[in-house]
Amino acid sequence: MARFRLQFAGRAGETNLAVSLEPLLLRAEFRARTWRSADGSLLQGFAGKGGFRLTIGNCLARICAASECSDAGWPVYACSDGRKRKMSVTDFVTASFDGVPYRRLSAPPSQE
Image 1 (tube, rainbow, N blue to C red):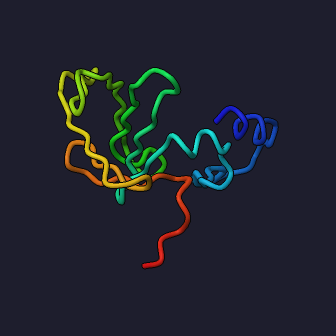
Image 2: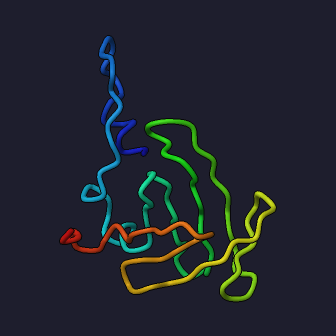
């Protein structure tokens, strides 16, 4: 986000400078640890810490809420919003967190 703020700094008078979050513009290591659900919610893994940041809702399109989730004994994660959530992993591409399916951003495009 800092990169985009700097990119648009100093453009006085312009409107509608919001740009969508494009996975291809993100660094590879970020894409490898980030999953997105169909509604735009994100599940972002912390490198080496075993926890996640859960962002519910699409922050670019509407209101969203974020909470930090730490390992409470697989498959349960205790989140900063006071809830405990369960994770299941189908394969390298798909994970389910609290019953919501997420797709890894670094996965090749689906052939649907």
